[in-house]
Image (cartoon, rainbow, N blue to C red; front, side):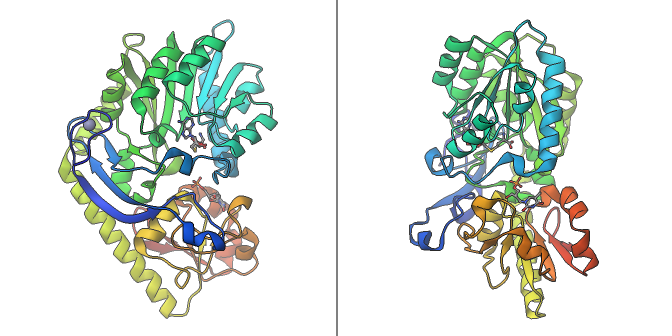
Length: 406
Ligand code: SAH
Ligand code: TMP
Ligand code: ZN
């Protein structure tokens, strides 16, 4: 039986997705033969409440000089991180020469707002191609993986930090004890660590199982997050739900006793209990809902194809890799996937090998149906795609339920 990476208890997986490729591993046709797969299973640890994969590909297979995810492709996310940065500046950077660190700073989407203020900052970004984009924008960035040893080095060279920030990164890192020790070392006595990630309660409630893929090792809740950091003399002092990535949670962590935990912590802890996030039965139900969702989506796509409809995927998201592989969606069901990211275009989607094509191939020859893989950006996309709707185009979604809409 696998062992929990947080508390070392044994746990049994509640679902297996079978063989899965690297979610961001878009490939050229000639690379098909070497494509890497791993067995993707998820389990729930009853002792500390952590939901986690049982196996993850080596980090260098996922985060490297060809990492396909550039944060700044979404305008909405750019606004989100601008607000996040402003909030940090208002609350936590009042010392005489504040220092802010971001873990997994990608192309600098958030740190740019600290660089503009000429505030001391440091981005830690192991994927060299995206780190380079940040460097070119004048954002101090080092291309390394964050852990305890790196934190030690940062403190030696820069002193401790007023704020350490991280978005959609913590859930990627299996060696979280080393990270937590690094945070403990890095924070000033009143410093805070703020991080956000997809929230387990949203995944359970919306059956948004496409959040589950190689990079996302953990699916956090208040219960599991406070358990982890308490093991290192750190305390969860605030939480704030976010609408990003289909429902996320921002956690504020500080040295034990440095701040009084906010009422929101008590409130969301009670909500988690009421939703049964601490009970194995909840994850049995989640598996049933995932299996039902798959059956309904496959039925719908096959029926539409039998009716002669053209279906195109919208957004070659990392999440879509779980959907296409788990549901067995191949190019005979979905003709191609439209995506605005140049590095993905002309390639095949991981595992399912659906061609990824530039957005213009969608906009100049509308299909009958667009399968909304980028459902977390629905608002931004619907505003942009009035033309598709007026041309009679319909959307297919699978979150929270498999359905079509205009
Ligand atoms: N914060 C950005 C990027 C999220 S993608 C956003 O929310 O849009 C996850 C990023 O984490 C990738 O750029 C990846 O290279 C980086 N990453 C993965 N492991 C890391 C580690 N150990 N330390 C720092 N960054 C890491
Ligand atoms: P994400 O869900 O991981 O943020 O990835 C979004 C992907 O969808 C990214 O590859 C860019 C693509 N995309 C489009 O092609 N068109 C759009 O309008 C949006 C918002 C995203
Ligand atoms: Zn555990």
